[in-house]
Image (cartoon, rainbow, N blue to C red; front, side, top):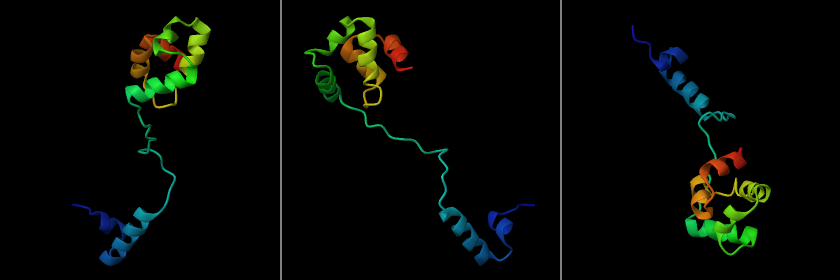
Length: 103
């Protein structure tokens, strides 16, 4: 025996369709498939952001900062759209150090 969706909702097909439409159009707060899109920056945009935010001439200088200062700077870029790998590539700081700073 094959059970159809509309048969589960009502024996009257037109009523079942209305119930189905109402159910599917009901607002809810489900977030199971929702996610926030983070706009990724190009390398040139990321480089400019790093330079503006830190006041340095070259992002590679961050790799020469002392540990505490480097962590503070790396954490400041966490939710800016710069990815881990991009930040590593531009600054010369390893992925492991950046990941550690971000966690």
